[in-house]
Amino acid sequence: MTDQDGKLTEQQEQAIRLIVLGRTDEEVGKAVGVARQTISKWKHHNPNFKAFLNKQRIETWELHQDQIR
Image 1 (cartoon, rainbow, N blue to C red):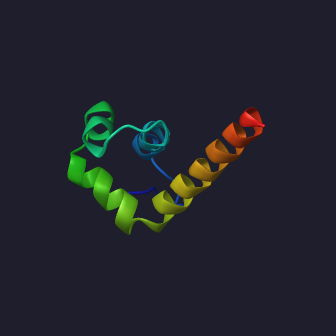
Image 2 (cartoon, rainbow, N blue to C red):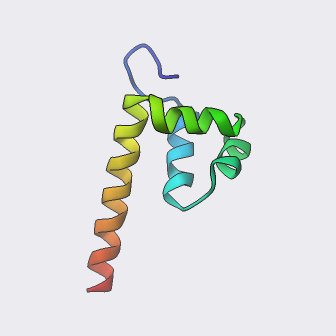
């Protein structure tokens, strides 16, 4: 689910933050008030969600790489 402009909902943005922190789909679903299956559907079938999630993962990885160096 996204809004009419193709932007992520607040629930989806919160879910992405939790996924990047390493939470399971079940934990994320409980935290944002949706079923585990909904999180899985967003991750695998929602292009906007997938793109933003991948962007956040890359940014997080790059941040940690710099800290390790």
